[in-house]
Image 1: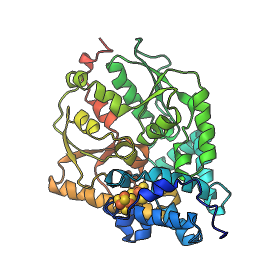
Image 2 (image 1 turned 90 degrees about the vertical axis):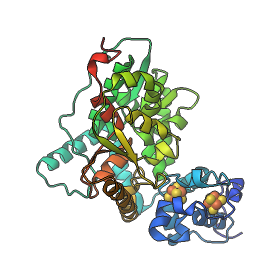
Image 3 (image 1 turned 180 degrees about the vertical axis):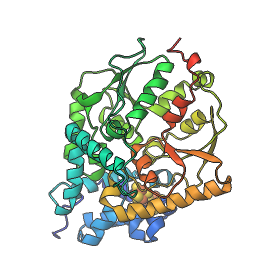
Image 4 (image 1 turned 90 degrees about the horizontal axis):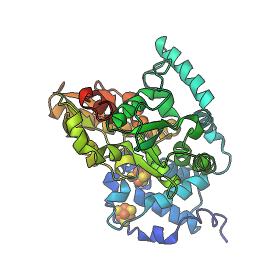
Length: 398
Ligand code: SF4
Ligand code: SF4
């Protein structure tokens, strides 16, 4: 038996055989668009995985690099006419490649340790906020402007009703983007929801770990959440986390991305939101559009208050990809460069200074795009909607 046999055996042969090598997915793959090389495309990666699994190729450094540079954006799945379930091919491969100790994973493991331990994350956040005040953080480091101390949550829900939901606060989202949680609560309360906070009881959902292939750590965090006593409906305002939690808590809780919950109330929101004379350009996070199939919802919600414009790149990834921008900075920056070219093309086509905001529903995309050269404010759609509330009309307020 060849020494490489035994690797990637968890990848289903049928999944591999579904790929007919047509190449129609290639233009939808951000890493192929950047490199132009087949091994950095979905088709090329599937062929590499098949060859390694069958023992026809050894798992060389170059192959590891080709597989590690897959952002797992899943832009290839909706583009594939054969219905290749690419996620079920790449996920076990990533998990297998990162299951043991590798020195080059050490910085990423340290970073994710900080994220997982809320006290460490708060301390790190405080250090960053001081560095930002001293203006010693280079713009290339993708961290948003952090308010310290963080704005506080109300101790008790402001609205008491039978419509109770749990807002999943998460890790980075809560440490760096508490204001988006407050905007989410404002909107939900305006719709008459009683909102509880998940806080440290749930902590991090493990999406970042899972994405990096550290599945054991992710499972540990997911088990903690499965055991938490709580409200049956969980609302999540980070696209990466809502995608991950839907899988982790399937069958025990209802998990809704905030955009799909708000869309259920679009008629109410048409009465609650005021019209604004501003234009928003939407950036669709991959885990919202490609993984959860949520796209028109964000557009139609924002259209209540704004003129909305969109990119014409079929939701091509921005390069953030969970911890991808940290573990593969060169590829991530190249992918972001293409995205920013598209952003600038749209801005020029609708006339400069016409676009007031870029809206993105994922913290990774928000901070990574903001680290690029871009002069338009990048905000979460929930913030734009909350700021457009006509408070006198809010259902929960009167
Ligand atoms: S993944 Fe799908 S689109 Fe891509 S080469 Fe295979 S069959 Fe064609
Ligand atoms: S998941 Fe994204 S980066 Fe990976 S092969 Fe598919 S399109 Fe390319």
